[in-house]
Length: 256
Image (tube, rainbow, N blue to C red; front, side, top):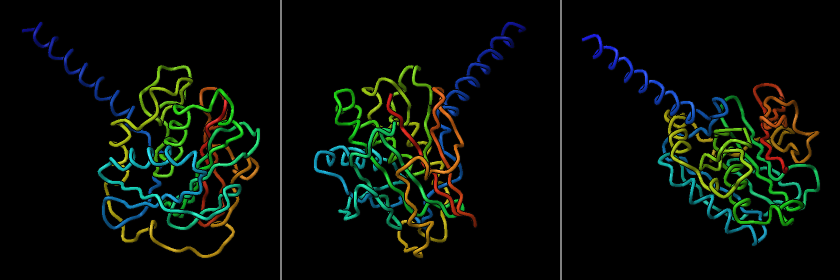
């Protein structure tokens, strides 16, 4: 009888460890931030301000994230200047340009009013993506997928570049090949983030023409204070606080 009790306790412990590992891996929102909406799935516009060489990567990213039960993304044309990539209320503008040797491959900036995301931008830095090291489909898919994923409220699943790849674009890794698309943990996390409904829809609203809503977020000096570092010591997330619950968060994917 004693052996049976010990064996049962061991099985319970194993199940507990397994459940913990799953939850730890899937728990990768970057706070309470989400797009407000009155029904699921959230329909979010991705404004295409990309050159044609990037269109296929945005199309792949849009299709991948739209596999979620709580999210549909729709690519629409955008006439914003790609160099500044100013935000548009109720959508995410996706841009590419030669932003210079500033150290980053891609950045995602997310505007939040309280807990609700109101607009976002993604910038892909061709200064690095035009080099042999990064001018590959794997790197472009990974960084595009990850930066757009941040716009929905997702954080990284792992921030240690030396760990084995997790098979998700929400993973910092030195090997982009296995990490070009979302994995099931990403879709599970989205369902958790968007489990409740709101009484308004921030993906379908205009915003007042204030400095907060048109803030420039291309240069590091504009990003505000660092609030999180990756294992390599580089800041992965910045926050600029405009007061009254208005904040802009900027996620950074640094070049090696």
